[in-house]
Image (cartoon, rainbow, N blue to C red; front, top):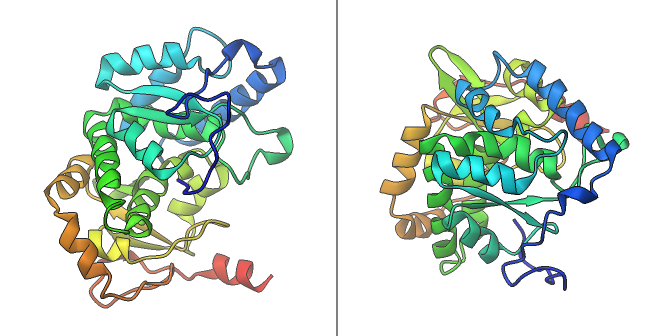
Length: 286
């Protein structure tokens, strides 16, 4: 999400652009296939089963990068969502409005070989492989729409930075319970080969049970793996808490509370794993 961008002249009023699937090169399709094969082989056993079930919507009749028109047709039949192309990051109100109307915005470009494990701006692999499979899950699809509706309301409270943390620690970097195990579901994790392993298997990060106010007080890392992950019980519970919360008094309460560092642990936290923070210490010292 972003706040100050000038709309490119080739985009529509809602910032969408044609995907222009035919313009992709053989190398760009090959990069998608390489990333898809790598993540698809590594995620079983690590990712929530709902993601693997939703992954079928990405198995297109055309090779390589999915055609958004075909993808939207398949996704619409499942949960009423569609995927629309945008030239890059879009303003917050535009982003929220698309989500509120069950449209997921995705970038058109794909990373180059030298960016295979890290790039600053989300590409089509992150946006589509990372996000779209769970849009085929009814409760998560409803949560994403509710987040968009809540985002539009948040603009009137000057609370966007608080609400952004909810998106970050759920949609992008969330973990979910699966019986006695933890599984991945956040798009920023499942589209990253390194973080897919780190988030579950490394001793470095904290893993803390989901608490809405606690999460919305917590800063996050944009330049490295997360120092803390928040764990939801289910998508249904995440949706329920979002729908049943009156965010106006919540925003007011948050204004009276200090922000928390990404590695903070509070006495009242339900800590599933107290991390060593070894990775962050090395990264911050270099």
